[in-house]
Image 1 (cartoon, rainbow, N blue to C red):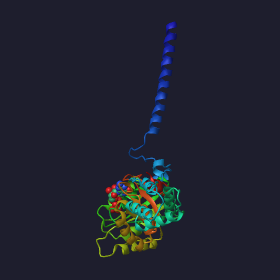
Image 2 (cartoon, rainbow, N blue to C red; image 1 turned 135 degrees about the vertical axis):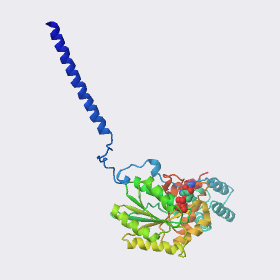
Image 3 (cartoon, rainbow, N blue to C red; image 1 turned 90 degrees about the horizontal axis):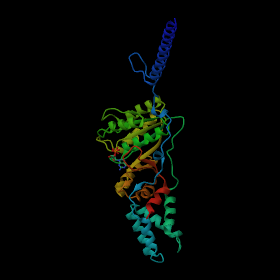
Length: 354
Ligand code: GDP
């Protein structure tokens, strides 16, 4: 009899163990399913956020940091100290100071102005480098962020000659604005340069921005018009418009830029910022070129690209004085995070560092 009881108990135990194990397996399967995206036929993927900008992102410090540029240090501070260390400052000192500034790419107008300002405040025993730093910051004025409206699509037009770094700057700027939580659209209105549209598409994808483009040779005004409509339909916070740096048609470039601006307004938007992209390495030649743009369109700020490596920093002061426009951003490399808001204090420290 006793073995029947043991047999029954063992059978019961086996049945209980079977159900316990089965239950555990079911739980594990449920767990696994909930972690695996359902992509089989007839299934709908979990909706992805419809735009990267909606994913609130806290920018990493390297993305946000302002900069005065990472141009080559030329020891201007040490040279100025040496010059004033020779004895009482006379006419020769002021002339040599002006030469030092011109050599640093500050430009003739800004150099003469700076020397005048320092001359007025200088007394024997004052630190000439500190004085120069104060005057440089005063010429550059307050650092200004982009002025973008709230509650409607802000428009940033980007102009400049080919090769200055316009498309790259637009890509970097788009990434920066998206990482600040804004929804960004890009208009590929440079329909003349080969592959400009494709290049912008790549940057747009990288940044998480919506890109509106047409075939090469299309009317830039038509692209701008479509882009405004598309930006409105997407509820974009900002539309950045790339423009041609050179035309193959008889229409002068500056007239074309004016037309693009008028079309944007006709489409129901308004241009809030016009950024002129300027290659810092072109030095004073670049300033002359840039003047044509400032005379034709109302430039509200300059983006100085390639202010890294071998560029001379003084060009920043030349831009401010000769073009009368503030530097808003500096490009310090070819990477997506290499666009920084310009900061006058950091710039003057670097320019005057020994
Ligand atoms: P665009 O013709 O004005 O649109 O010029 P691109 O955007 O195509 O840029 C021309 C070249 O300059 C490319 O090789 C870019 O990678 C390079 N570039 C743009 N910005 C910077 C910068 O800030 N620093 C450096 N070193 N290169 C840059």
